[in-house]
Image (cartoon, rainbow over all chains, first blue to last red; front, side, top):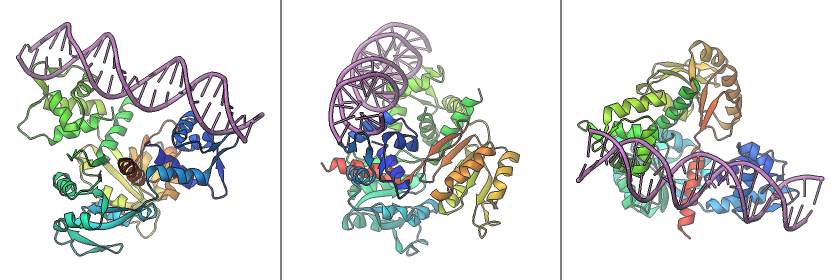
Length: 199
Length: 199
DNA sequence: ACATGTGAAGCGCTTCACAGCG
DNA sequence: CGCTGTGAAGCGCTTCACATGT
């Protein structure tokens, strides 16, 4: 399930001419084995042609379908530091159906500033904005100290999913999905492998 | 193994007064169950006291030990866009033993600029810098198009580990560890859960 | 003949349950 | 008595191998 986005990525990176792909090809592209790819794809239904492979366009469509990417989803970004700014400027999101519907920050000096056409608003406005603009996903790019507070605001405003970049474990109601991306943790894992290897 | 950094994080977030913690406590803090925590920690050796719990300081030290975090590691960041800048400015890395020893970008207009005391250097200088400054870890924060090229440069310069933020799967020799962090994939996974939930 | 789709085997990780120790 | 440490059971995911379909 976590691999479907990866397949989608690989399919998008394929040369334009290619209209068909075998599980073997897609596997090497994604760094996995072919049986796994077939299992994963059979989960979507039977969209392959035996003796040939998968139709690239059809497969792309089906994966998008399965991931619910064929629907636009409103997204707010909270915390417009360096990271928040980077995310707000990243055009890839819009292209993939994630529409930024609000940028928020606690710092009064940042309020009113604009990034890529979006105005930065104060945290007070967050709850109402989530409700009225129908935001489904929130990105927390605040410092660790404010993350839980922001998460509470978002949860009570009825957000459905949170992508948390702050290096803390936030607590939310069961109705909210959270994914955590922590740069420090990633580096630490790499550190572990380096450490292992040197023994 | 991927959870050790999480435990470390939780331990660091503990109130200063607390000198001991039970597996149960740490489990709720990390969002897991207590048996798992005990299994993970017993992997490090027997550092708990039965009937009491784990000594916080001792545990922190042992986890750092296991992750190889007690050694300083040189780190270079390639691609000083919004994301690269955000990473270069993040003080947390230095505190955790990851020392930035170089910033690199392909754009001539950025060369010579300074971020947090570090000068931005051209890609030509990357290979030599990695070798002479003994960089172990590289962060790729370039656009997707340049990621593979940069990875090749890094690999031939003898880098040990790469943290890749570019939305592509890069190919490197077996001697190099790669971890991939892809914002779009994360959002897509969230999208999947939203989609599931609405059925 | 070639590549998918899929039962079955294999494997590792998670969870349980309790013995052991302070 | 409380909490750790750990064998054993349980579970899901990965891999294999081959039957199936074009």
